Each structure stands twice: as structure tokens, then as C-alpha cells.
Image 1 (cartoon, chains in turn cyan, blue):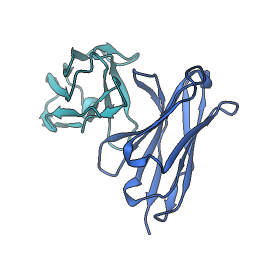
Image 2: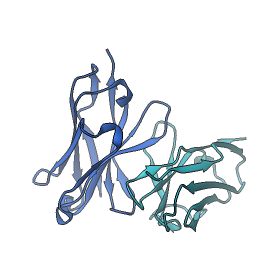
Image 3: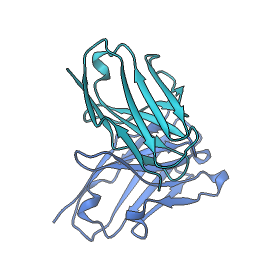
Length: 106
Length: 120
């Protein structure tokens, strides 16, 4: 199975900040990498697919980049509704998720 | 509008069985692969199983921890995907989400989730 390691596991930031979350795969996965947002007690929501494509309806302050084994999710101009847990997920082979990154208000 | 609605969760003793159902609407059900993703209390997301669409032969895959115990299936005439869970273990406790799976791409739509609690 392909392992995904996210860093950091948690971070604190303020409204208006720019934050970056990293996801590293245990082997190359081309661009088969997605990002999801999950607010507390809510259903996960697809943000980015194919490493950098924005899912319909997702604000443009969310962006993704990377290929091979190293990927990033960047959130520009953090909004109050962005404080949540973020997961990466690979679809190169049998799906696996990263362990999650909790984004908290500073 | 795509909608996925799960049912069948509940409290069950270890070793017993439970069947989850996921009813889809707003899309051509048999064209799409369907998957189950679970989340143990306070933990992250874990893909459990998926079944491909009719055109891809309705093939199935499972995470290692449920192989031989869980069976995924679908009834395209009713737009329902099932997850039959046998020999349940306490580690199977969590919220089970039904998702639409674009093969080698993304889980693009999710149901609200159903809680499964395995406890004596």
C-alpha cells in the first residue's frame, strides 16, 4: 500500500494568513493526489483533485501543487470557515489517506 | 443534484453482522463506482471498499483489515450499494460514509454517514 504522510499534524494560524500543508507519498503517484476538508462533525468535502485541479464550487484561495511524491495544499487569505482538518488521498493505486492536518485558529 | 443516503447502522455485538445500504440519486447509478470510507471516533479517514460500475465489470476491492469479512455489492435496478459486514470487531466502530468514486481519480460526492458501534 502507498503511505501518505502529512505535515504538520496540526498548525495554528490567523484569519488572513497564508498556510501550506504538505503531503508526501511513499512512492511516486504521478498527480493522483486529492485534498479534502472536514469540519468537526461534518462530511468530508473534496477541494482539489489531480494534485492541482479545483473542484467545482471551491473558493480560489485553495490551491494545490506537486507531482511524483511531494504535494502541497495552500490556503491564501484564511477565512474563519477554513479552520478544519485537511486530508490528502492518493488514487494511483488502492486508495489511501494521509493522517490529517488540523488547522486551528491562533 | 447528486445525493447519497446511507442506512443500516446501529449497535451490534462483536462477532455479529450488519448490512449498510447506500441509495444514490441524481446521476446514472450504474455508470459509477461506489465506495465506503470509514472514520473511527477521533481518527482519520480510511477507505474500506469499492465496487466499480457496470461498464468496468463491477469489480471489488477491500482494505486488508476487512477482507474475508466484508462484502460490497450493488443493485443497479434500485440504485443501491451495499456493505455486508460479518464477524464485526470493536475496531470496526465508526462512521461509515458512502461515496461516489471516480476510478483512479476522486471521491466526489459523500453521504451524511452512518454510525456503526461494535460493542458488547
